[in-house]
Length: 365
Image 1: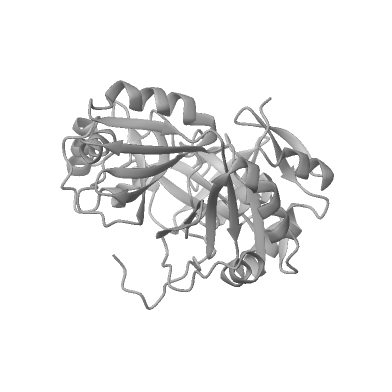
Image 2 (image 1 turned 90 degrees about the horizontal axis):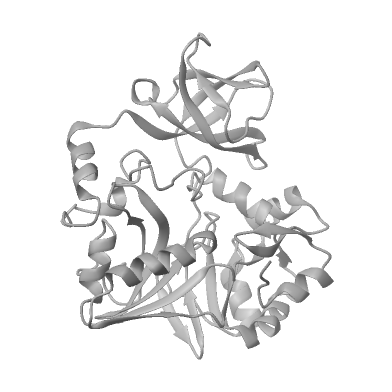
């Protein structure tokens, strides 16, 4: 397995390690998943997400290139603004979800999922215009700092002032790329930096009284509470943005010539047979990925769970599922079959927990 630049630190901190996206990654630390989850919601947690792919795409035609590969519009995106979007395949499915930040007119910083980065890079290179280049920042680490005290920690631990940095905005600080975003719904940052500097920065953050290390298990429960999809589970190469209830990434839908547009535009016009929805368990039990979903009578199968687990914040089990469209309305009663036992549940709105991402007085771009 591959190792991130922070691997040795995880071993010293006695993390429980396991394979994830081809890397030996920290799943949890000695305090346990519940403590890590709640600490992030109340203070600030640091996550090693250096397995993610970090790319610089620049040169003539870069903007049009990104509008071909995704259903989003970048020609009107202002500099230092990030956008969540998806890479599309020719069948109208999603190759990956990713964050793209416009640095300059024809220069972008792109972060893709660790498990998908090799295929993403190959797909991008197949379509890269002659005037553009793609650089994989293989010698960079990525540290996520998440929680209501994240801004204070940036100031006190790293002497970096982020008061005027709005949500989904980017700033460069020396050789750091700092983006105010994350995968938890809390205020926070992702810090891209040279690998050789990552251990020192990690320990500076960890020395702050409000900071603890957080593993991938708590990262998953945090994102599940926000209703964020996990690639390879809640979205994949067969699901469209319409089925995934993610059409907001298309904005005003000015971009109609992207790869896979035929299916997506048809579904926008005529609807789709299923939809990604939130699930809240009202009976006793926890349902996991793969559990079958039935109607209120427990007779007709209407979907399948793609993510599921216990919500430490809500103290109940939640999940995501693809449900037949006629049963996908909020508050519809359903049953989830777990080990031949039906557990009562309802279709729930997402996010399950209100986002706390920061808005500043600075005008949003």
